[in-house]
Length: 136
Image (cartoon, rainbow, N blue to C red; front, side, top):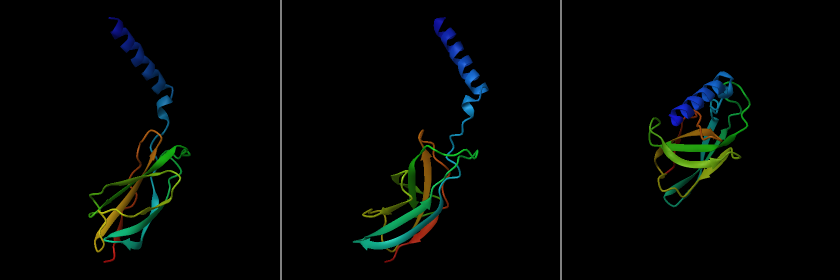
């Protein structure tokens, strides 16, 4: 019986917080990363050296200022609609160099997309997916 009462009070407390607006703070990291660009810098044996750069999001989807950007997740693949996780980079970056990755073979075409995530690890929508044709 005591556990049912505790559950009842917990449920009422959560409903109260939601009704007071405590649950209305946006946590969606906005529209995400924009202006993604990639350049092939050089080659390192059989793999390519690629620099990705981007513009970070600055607001949430409700236009509140974003102040808890925690980092970016970079995805890649051989098809624009099937991207796999490649790297997690810090929030202080707006570019990164990808090198010595045996999955990036010279002469192939790859697609890259980037998401931003906040302090509670909620990811934004994927950026525009860009294509990179690596030199042979």
